[in-house]
View 1 (cartoon, rainbow, N blue to C red):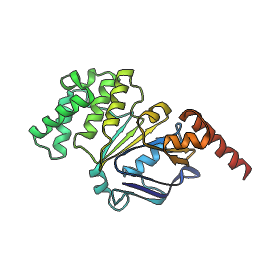
View 2: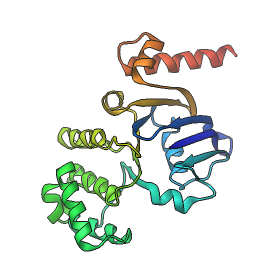
View 3: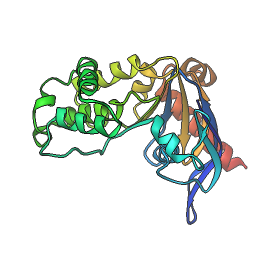
View 4: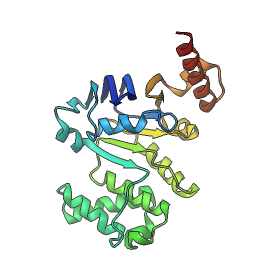
Length: 246
Protein backbone atom coordinates (compact mmCIF):
# COMPACT_ATOMS: atom_id res chain seq x y z
CA UNK A 1 0.00 0.00 0.00
CA UNK A 2 2.83 2.41 0.89
CA UNK A 3 6.45 2.21 -0.21
CA UNK A 4 9.18 4.73 0.57
CA UNK A 5 12.62 4.39 -0.96
CA UNK A 6 15.61 6.46 0.17
CA UNK A 7 13.38 9.38 1.04
CA UNK A 8 15.20 12.54 2.14
CA UNK A 9 14.20 16.13 2.80
CA UNK A 10 16.68 18.91 3.53
CA UNK A 11 16.27 22.58 4.35
CA UNK A 12 19.61 24.18 3.63
CA UNK A 13 22.07 22.28 5.82
CA UNK A 14 19.37 20.75 8.01
CA UNK A 15 18.25 17.21 7.17
CA UNK A 16 14.61 16.74 8.28
CA UNK A 17 14.57 13.23 6.73
CA UNK A 18 17.61 11.12 5.92
CA UNK A 19 17.39 8.25 3.45
CA UNK A 20 14.22 6.63 4.86
CA UNK A 21 13.02 3.39 3.27
CA UNK A 22 10.01 1.45 4.58
CA UNK A 23 6.74 -0.15 3.52
CA UNK A 24 3.26 -0.41 5.01
CA UNK A 25 0.65 -2.99 4.07
CA UNK A 26 -3.09 -2.78 3.56
CA UNK A 27 -5.19 -3.80 6.52
CA UNK A 28 -2.80 -2.49 9.15
CA UNK A 29 -2.37 0.45 11.47
CA UNK A 30 1.22 1.54 10.92
CA UNK A 31 2.80 3.74 13.57
CA UNK A 32 5.40 6.47 13.13
CA UNK A 33 7.06 7.02 16.50
CA UNK A 34 9.50 9.61 17.71
CA UNK A 35 9.87 12.86 19.61
CA UNK A 36 9.08 16.27 18.17
CA UNK A 37 11.57 16.97 15.40
CA UNK A 38 12.11 13.30 14.56
CA UNK A 39 10.80 13.74 11.00
CA UNK A 40 7.33 12.20 11.39
CA UNK A 41 5.34 15.20 10.17
CA UNK A 42 7.77 15.86 7.30
CA UNK A 43 7.36 12.28 6.14
CA UNK A 44 3.57 12.43 6.34
CA UNK A 45 3.44 15.75 4.49
CA UNK A 46 5.43 14.21 1.66
CA UNK A 47 3.03 11.26 1.49
CA UNK A 48 0.09 13.71 1.50
CA UNK A 49 1.67 15.64 -1.44
CA UNK A 50 2.09 18.78 0.70
CA UNK A 51 5.90 18.68 0.49
CA UNK A 52 8.28 17.51 -2.20
CA UNK A 53 11.19 15.31 -1.12
CA UNK A 54 14.73 16.41 -1.86
CA UNK A 55 15.46 12.88 -3.08
CA UNK A 56 13.96 9.42 -3.08
CA UNK A 57 10.51 8.12 -4.03
CA UNK A 58 7.16 7.49 -2.38
CA UNK A 59 4.23 5.50 -3.79
CA UNK A 60 0.78 5.05 -2.29
CA UNK A 61 -1.51 2.29 -3.61
CA UNK A 62 0.64 2.20 -6.74
CA UNK A 63 0.53 5.97 -7.34
CA UNK A 64 3.73 8.01 -7.37
CA UNK A 65 3.38 10.87 -4.89
CA UNK A 66 5.34 13.28 -7.09
CA UNK A 67 3.98 12.30 -10.51
CA UNK A 68 0.35 11.57 -9.55
CA UNK A 69 -0.50 13.93 -6.69
CA UNK A 70 -4.20 14.22 -7.57
CA UNK A 71 -4.64 10.44 -7.59
CA UNK A 72 -2.89 10.24 -4.21
CA UNK A 73 -5.05 12.97 -2.69
CA UNK A 74 -8.23 11.14 -3.70
CA UNK A 75 -7.10 8.20 -1.54
CA UNK A 76 -6.42 10.26 1.57
CA UNK A 77 -8.01 11.53 4.74
CA UNK A 78 -5.66 13.67 6.85
CA UNK A 79 -5.86 14.80 10.49
CA UNK A 80 -3.30 16.67 12.53
CA UNK A 81 -3.41 18.30 15.93
CA UNK A 82 -3.80 21.86 14.69
CA UNK A 83 -6.67 21.78 12.20
CA UNK A 84 -9.44 24.35 12.59
CA UNK A 85 -13.15 24.55 11.80
CA UNK A 86 -15.35 27.45 10.65
CA UNK A 87 -16.62 28.92 13.93
CA UNK A 88 -20.07 29.84 12.57
CA UNK A 89 -20.92 26.38 11.21
CA UNK A 90 -22.31 23.42 13.13
CA UNK A 91 -20.61 20.06 12.89
CA UNK A 92 -23.37 18.77 10.64
CA UNK A 93 -22.95 21.74 8.29
CA UNK A 94 -19.19 21.21 8.15
CA UNK A 95 -19.60 17.53 7.31
CA UNK A 96 -22.32 18.12 4.71
CA UNK A 97 -20.13 20.77 3.07
CA UNK A 98 -17.15 18.44 2.78
CA UNK A 99 -19.33 15.56 1.63
CA UNK A 100 -20.51 17.81 -1.20
CA UNK A 101 -16.91 18.48 -2.22
CA UNK A 102 -16.53 14.73 -2.69
CA UNK A 103 -19.67 14.56 -4.83
CA UNK A 104 -21.88 12.95 -2.19
CA UNK A 105 -25.65 13.57 -2.36
CA UNK A 106 -27.44 14.91 0.72
CA UNK A 107 -29.02 11.56 1.62
CA UNK A 108 -25.70 9.77 1.18
CA UNK A 109 -23.93 12.41 3.29
CA UNK A 110 -26.51 12.20 6.07
CA UNK A 111 -26.26 8.41 6.15
CA UNK A 112 -22.48 8.68 6.45
CA UNK A 113 -22.79 11.32 9.18
CA UNK A 114 -25.05 8.94 11.12
CA UNK A 115 -22.39 6.22 10.83
CA UNK A 116 -19.70 8.58 12.08
CA UNK A 117 -21.92 9.76 14.93
CA UNK A 118 -21.99 6.17 16.17
CA UNK A 119 -18.27 5.57 15.57
CA UNK A 120 -17.00 8.84 17.07
CA UNK A 121 -19.79 9.69 19.52
CA UNK A 122 -20.29 13.07 17.86
CA UNK A 123 -23.46 13.76 19.85
CA UNK A 124 -24.17 17.44 20.35
CA UNK A 125 -21.20 18.51 18.18
CA UNK A 126 -23.42 17.96 15.15
CA UNK A 127 -25.85 20.74 16.00
CA UNK A 128 -23.65 23.17 17.94
CA UNK A 129 -21.54 25.82 16.25
CA UNK A 130 -17.83 25.00 16.10
CA UNK A 131 -16.95 28.24 17.88
CA UNK A 132 -18.44 26.73 21.05
CA UNK A 133 -16.48 23.46 20.90
CA UNK A 134 -14.01 22.15 23.43
CA UNK A 135 -10.74 20.76 22.06
CA UNK A 136 -12.13 17.22 22.14
CA UNK A 137 -15.36 18.18 20.38
CA UNK A 138 -13.43 20.00 17.66
CA UNK A 139 -11.06 17.11 17.06
CA UNK A 140 -13.91 14.62 16.72
CA UNK A 141 -15.47 16.72 13.95
CA UNK A 142 -12.05 17.21 12.31
CA UNK A 143 -11.65 13.42 12.21
CA UNK A 144 -15.19 12.93 10.89
CA UNK A 145 -14.49 15.53 8.20
CA UNK A 146 -11.32 13.70 7.15
CA UNK A 147 -13.13 10.37 6.74
CA UNK A 148 -16.52 11.57 5.42
CA UNK A 149 -15.63 10.09 2.01
CA UNK A 150 -14.42 6.78 3.52
CA UNK A 151 -10.79 7.17 2.35
CA UNK A 152 -8.54 4.25 1.57
CA UNK A 153 -5.65 5.76 3.54
CA UNK A 154 -6.05 7.72 6.79
CA UNK A 155 -3.18 9.86 8.11
CA UNK A 156 -3.39 10.75 11.81
CA UNK A 157 -0.53 13.06 12.81
CA UNK A 158 -0.51 13.56 16.59
CA UNK A 159 -4.32 13.46 16.37
CA UNK A 160 -4.71 12.74 20.11
CA UNK A 161 -2.73 15.82 21.14
CA UNK A 162 -4.64 17.89 23.70
CA UNK A 163 -7.60 15.52 23.96
CA UNK A 164 -9.18 14.69 27.29
CA UNK A 165 -9.38 11.07 28.40
CA UNK A 166 -12.85 10.51 26.92
CA UNK A 167 -12.08 11.99 23.49
CA UNK A 168 -8.76 10.14 23.40
CA UNK A 169 -10.51 6.84 24.11
CA UNK A 170 -13.00 7.51 21.32
CA UNK A 171 -10.14 8.21 18.91
CA UNK A 172 -8.19 5.06 19.80
CA UNK A 173 -11.30 2.89 19.50
CA UNK A 174 -12.02 4.47 16.11
CA UNK A 175 -8.49 3.73 14.90
CA UNK A 176 -8.79 0.12 16.03
CA UNK A 177 -12.10 -0.26 14.18
CA UNK A 178 -10.59 1.31 11.04
CA UNK A 179 -8.28 -1.69 10.57
CA UNK A 180 -9.87 -3.26 7.48
CA UNK A 181 -8.77 -5.07 4.29
CA UNK A 182 -7.87 -2.65 1.53
CA UNK A 183 -7.23 0.23 3.93
CA UNK A 184 -4.23 1.68 5.72
CA UNK A 185 -3.98 3.96 8.75
CA UNK A 186 -0.75 5.86 9.38
CA UNK A 187 -0.64 6.82 13.06
CA UNK A 188 2.00 9.30 14.15
CA UNK A 189 2.61 9.86 17.85
CA UNK A 190 5.25 10.43 20.50
CA UNK A 191 3.05 8.68 23.09
CA UNK A 192 4.27 5.09 23.13
CA UNK A 193 1.27 3.68 25.01
CA UNK A 194 -1.02 4.77 22.17
CA UNK A 195 1.13 2.90 19.66
CA UNK A 196 1.23 -0.20 21.83
CA UNK A 197 -2.55 -0.27 21.86
CA UNK A 198 -3.46 0.38 18.22
CA UNK A 199 -0.48 -0.30 15.93
CA UNK A 200 0.30 -3.54 14.11
CA UNK A 201 3.81 -2.39 13.20
CA UNK A 202 5.80 0.74 13.97
CA UNK A 203 8.70 2.69 12.51
CA UNK A 204 10.89 4.54 15.00
CA UNK A 205 12.39 7.79 13.73
CA UNK A 206 15.06 9.87 15.42
CA UNK A 207 16.67 13.05 14.08
CA UNK A 208 15.28 12.34 10.62
CA UNK A 209 16.66 8.80 10.38
CA UNK A 210 14.88 5.47 10.52
CA UNK A 211 16.02 3.53 13.58
CA UNK A 212 13.96 0.35 13.12
CA UNK A 213 10.68 -1.08 11.76
CA UNK A 214 8.79 -4.02 13.21
CA UNK A 215 5.97 -5.34 15.31
CA UNK A 216 5.99 -4.24 18.92
CA UNK A 217 6.74 -7.79 20.19
CA UNK A 218 9.69 -7.94 17.77
CA UNK A 219 11.04 -4.60 18.98
CA UNK A 220 10.66 -5.62 22.62
CA UNK A 221 12.49 -8.88 21.88
CA UNK A 222 15.20 -6.99 19.98
CA UNK A 223 15.90 -4.69 22.94
CA UNK A 224 15.03 -6.97 25.84
CA UNK A 225 12.81 -4.26 27.29
CA UNK A 226 9.36 -4.70 28.82
CA UNK A 227 7.54 -1.82 27.12
CA UNK A 228 7.82 0.27 23.99
CA UNK A 229 8.96 3.45 25.70
CA UNK A 230 11.96 1.70 27.25
CA UNK A 231 12.68 -0.03 23.94
CA UNK A 232 12.58 3.32 22.15
CA UNK A 233 15.19 4.83 24.46
CA UNK A 234 17.39 1.75 24.17
CA UNK A 235 17.32 1.91 20.38
CA UNK A 236 17.93 5.65 20.22
CA UNK A 237 20.84 5.40 22.66
CA UNK A 238 22.27 2.58 20.58
CA UNK A 239 22.02 4.63 17.43
CA UNK A 240 23.79 7.56 19.11
CA UNK A 241 26.59 5.36 20.39
CA UNK A 242 27.07 3.82 16.94
CA UNK A 243 27.20 7.28 15.35
CA UNK A 244 29.86 8.45 17.85
CA UNK A 245 31.91 5.29 17.34
CA UNK A 246 31.96 5.83 13.55
